Length: 49
Image 1 (cartoon, rainbow, N blue to C red):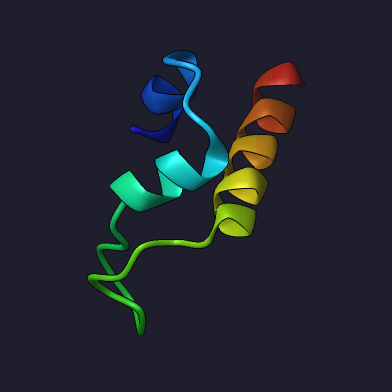
Image 2 (cartoon, one colour):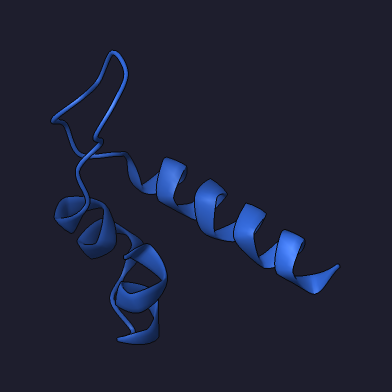
């Protein structure tokens, strides 16, 4: 979902506001913009190798 939102040129804050954590201690909350940035960066690094 985050990749789809990034393709629509939304800001990190907008992406974070639309995502919801589905498991763990923070279930039901929105991730921070830093978490979204880290998640997208990790994905880009994995797909580059």
